[in-house]
Picture 1 (cartoon, rainbow, N blue to C red):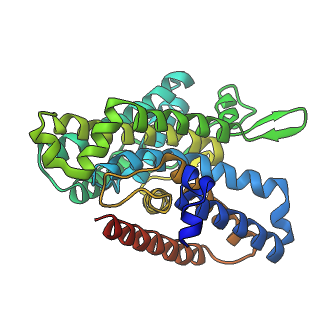
Picture 2 (picture 1 turned 180 degrees about the vertical axis):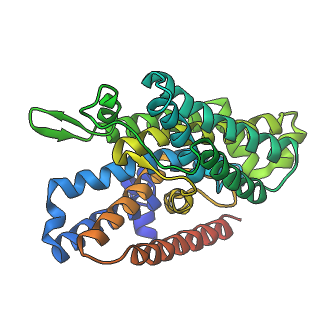
Length: 327
């Protein structure tokens, strides 16, 4: 094992990411053997569609977990943003571009509220995000009068937003959503690893008191982590409706767990202070591939939950072992 750890390529890429990449390839090969239909381009495209919105959720919650906090409201906030902006688009006739901005604004508002309550209000992030989860469900339901909202199809005048997820060029479907997600991931990685924002967020997760005593306004930077998370939940809403069109009120909880699972699986420590954007993306791809592979085999979705749960437990266990070894 030490020989593998000391390998120059492994050192550069990171052992965790090498292992995750191997798991991703093995999963693809396994599903291809068990279900030949899994090799079809439509299956891969479907998995990428799922990965797009889930990826933005995971990128956002990576910043929060890096501070040592948690956000269980991101799924319902995504649905709330999609419901409100979709209602304004389809029922009130608002311009599509404005509705997209409204979606991002709704997510950002919830992020600001969560951040202020946790950092300045001193409330536990677990309780705060659980409350926000219920509030966002209620707000979305009240705004749409408990009715589902169906965003326009590609053939409609306002359907061009669906090209953000996949675009047809010369008879081929291009996963534009994946390209945008990867661009977003690069931006997030730069913020987290190359800017003052990221350094303070990671330092807060490592040793909040030491950072505070050094004169840094920890409350401001912690709040900003939640704001980024909320903003990306609003972005995720656009990619969700771009893939699936219809949004139902009162849902979204499942995506909390999957987004956090992808983040933790990718090497972001639940204790804070350590985060990997590239690892988060690989973790999301594993979950998306697992979901599509389970469907291709004709199995039920609960099987996916079991496998995802086992992988997350293994990732957390490995993180704890690594921290104890470093300490």
